[in-house]
Image (cartoon, rainbow, N blue to C red; front, side, top):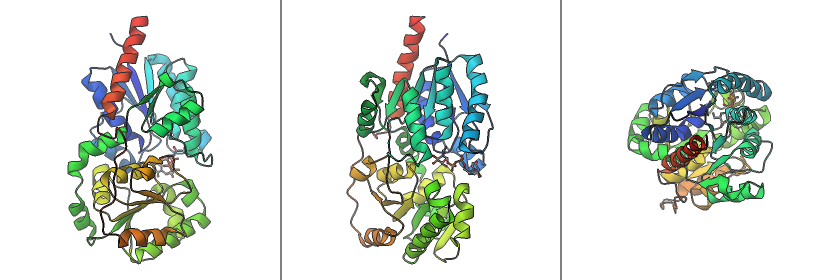
Length: 365
Ligand code: UD1
């Protein structure tokens, strides 16, 4: 009997990355176990994605919830260790750069279980971002590293990862986008929210933008300026809600704040937008493929391919208005080049490598 492949997911951005890998392995008849750490637990950040993306119900939910970085990471490790110790899977697959990712990689490698990292090698070179620390540690421990772009290969090689451990497979989150694109319906979102034909969408949840009142005030001032040009819909992430509201986010008639949205509704809204303003990682990639202009309010990005090939630009809060004016004043279609291998088949490529790897382990026994 083939040994099981254990997947660990925990937070919203993990789910669209895991879905195509789970489905492609399912088609091969792999034995799989899905563990949800419970890092995200609100229906809108978790269960709604499982429904939309037809991800199987997790076999186990550790329900660890929120906490400090150490508290959350440690709780995931303790919960997961007992499961991995008992099940002894052939391989553990981790996704992206959230605390659940690094916690699972630490548990697996200390128990001698090979780790596969999906979305390896991205680097912002900014260690003030918790995700950057999670990426570096996870990649250091991983045995199989699946990368979405060529720059990631260079980063990993520079850190000493052997070339044969790195697999350039494309972007599984874009598999999910392409699989669902026909159900992204801007009209229904516009009607539901009472929007005019031209509108913007914003998301803000990075600690650097929302954890201090000073940063939140700068962000809100910048968003209010743009809201004078075009209405902005903001699905407000729980992390930034309090500070953004204290900074007066809701005090402009052009700001339409809503709760976090399910996957298909949100991408329907984004697909019809003239402009996206964000500090999310995934949205930089999704706008690149949807051909929607993206202004990323961060000093750096770990996804430079969205700038060189896609629709993305980095902006400061002070520079947002000028950049938004330029985008809104430009009626010409954006010059789009879809990044290499962002073609809807990344999950298949990842599954192929994982499948061969577990078969080799089996045969070696
Ligand atoms: C996490 C990821 C981040 C990712 C983001 C996407 C880390 C270090 N960060 O950030 O990379 O971009 O998810 O959403 O892993 N909360 C709720 N309900 C929930 C989950 C969280 O209300 O279901 C609130 C809690 O107050 C919590 C706060 O949001 O303290 C932050 O949650 P946490 O998972 O620690 O980090 P995110 O900011 O969501």
